Image (cartoon, each protein chain N blue to C red):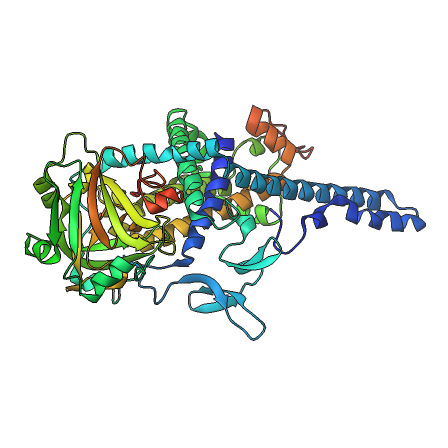
Length: 292
Length: 257
């Protein structure tokens, strides 16, 4: 590793060879020669360390672009997921907090207000025309208005939101348990994942589909704390936090908590959806399993 | 085992800094609060352009060139830790995580294997635990280290008392802490025993402790490598790999027991 702002070449031995040569005017004593040799060796060592460090860095960056290597690195997530499900099986509950721990303002991240025309039209009408579609591999597809969702049994929970970036924020969420909607829809035996289709285009809205989406397995879909939230801290869900409806999957990271949900689709595989990795950020290289 | 550790620890430290860079601030408590991190690295505008600054425990230190603002491909770039200290070099959180979690597995498996070995081979009792006499002589050992006086003769075969203590702190203090605090940041692991993260003071405290323990490990590595170099690098390296350790020359008058 070379210190910053210093070109690597500065460590090279050659630049220091001038010193002993200039001393040749007076024949050098054995001592100075030894010192010079020691110094040369030190420079050589330092140069070797710097060269090895920079070679390692370049190597790591090259490997980060090697598909086979990255696939090998990413394979660890299967091990992590299996191990985590072993120590924290399906019923294990995320920590819930006292209301006194609720953050003064809940941080918003990612999309803060979707520019998409269909979303803006719904927002103008205060989501009176909003309908959540539940479909895909189910026996009974259905649509729900916000009023219908609010009339269903609700769960309220004060939980900690953990962003993949590293920060955490505590808030109180109220919403419909996803399990209720799934039970009503009666998934087909072939269904394995729940996909959340969202309103917000991550690039400029256009023909290229960059709308946010996410997916979870049934382990998390039927978990007691997995809800579709329409309230944050006793208020209607703010636009910057995903109005009118967002997902809470409390045992996974923030990017799994899809905001601006417009439809729920049950699938047997997400391989043919957009980038095929099961979510917008997953298509950008993040792990599908966000429990770590 | 040792060389697996060298590879793992290097990659874990450097990919860890990539992850840190995604939100370069540390807090105490259950959540971030954002208002008062005890450590934050960023930039500050000045008339002459932005400068890199590090806020630590209420103080502001200018750290342009290293922390907050550093050169990436010749351009001053806003990033907490510089690109020569991170894996991958460019700020790329997803890739940093892939490196980190893959090598974390190898590191932990290797560490558990080492722990079992120290217990069953009696390496722990025989070599790592200092004797009472050694503990009493800790003052002179400290002085010898400061004066770069290294043990000669048979004494050089054994770990000395400061070595014992620092190895024990690393093996039974820093390493378990870094692993535990790392696990505490996983929302799924947090649910294994609901609320256990509070034992570490909450998730953001765990993130801070993970960082501090990692810094402690780095400090250990720096001192360790320094001591290996000053006490004869080839002899030590050969003994680490092959077990063949050449005794440093003894003063003549010393009589072997």
